[in-house]
Length: 206
Image 1: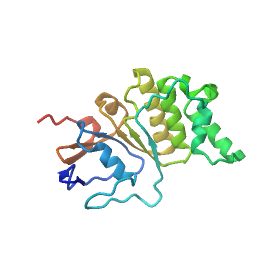
Image 2: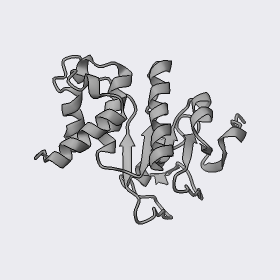
Image 3: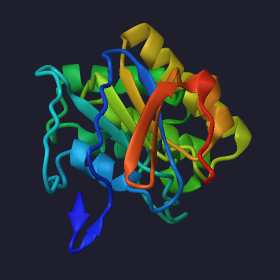
């Protein structure tokens, strides 16, 4: 991928297996966000191509964004932003199911502006899950969360992977968290990529 004369990365090649959990690691400015945008179809690579299996349906959970305390929507209404305007029984059941999956049922009527950081991130996750994806990209989704909220979010991701076989790509700088919850890594640095098992990961400081 190039921007004007700057090459972000080149000749990178990797494969993600169905049902796998992979941490996308690397220093700031190495192109992790660029790579995610390519995979989500928001950017076109300068050369080369990539292909998902025909049945892949992507879900996306963004980096924690603080929502203003005056934000009026309830947690439930926020999740429903990703649902059709006309709420059939099936849609309502699906919302209820995702509220339950993300442990938000009891606080569904709390305003998003009053929710904790961890609760907000779980609402973003529930919103992504409404589309019933079989692959989720977590884009530094645990950054800025406290340790308890990080563990709760990643525990949910682990459950989704094990119970529903959802493939996970987790962009993070938190190596201990990645080692605890991810099986594989992609390490993007100096324009190239390295792939391996998370338990064997060693950072490249040269």
